[in-house]
Amino acid sequence: PIGSYPGLLKGMGGAMDLVSAPDAKVVVTMDHTSKSGAPKILPECSLPLTGKGVVDRIITDMCVFDCDKHGDGGLTLVEIAPHLTVDDIRNVTGCNFKVASDPLPSMSDENEEEDTASVG
Image 1: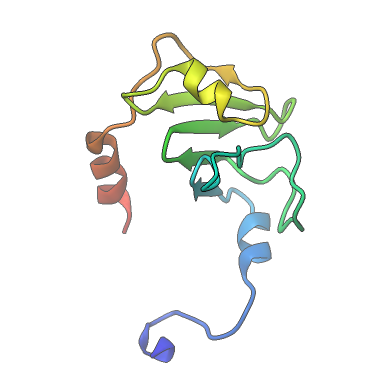
Image 2: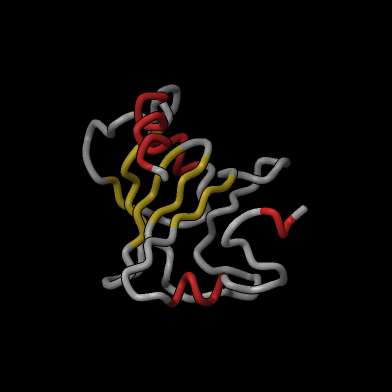
């Protein structure tokens, strides 16, 4: 039951508190495209927002974007899946983005293990 987890509160909410907290790092994990192949990363959100301009990083099954929260609000591609190219990412992303470096680092199991090990 939900009440058996220490520190877990019953009920709705909390997202606004998380995204508005000073120094909060907000990371979105998602599929890059819909089941039909349509882009899910778009120039503007069509759904109600929990917070505007609060996302630091977007991690998808295809790549990793850093979000510029203080400048132009754009995305920068910082990692890419080993089997993909930057053009592949451009073809399935519904907005423009910058590319951090050439060549880009690859998303790998090693990076996932490091991220998992640091969670605690």
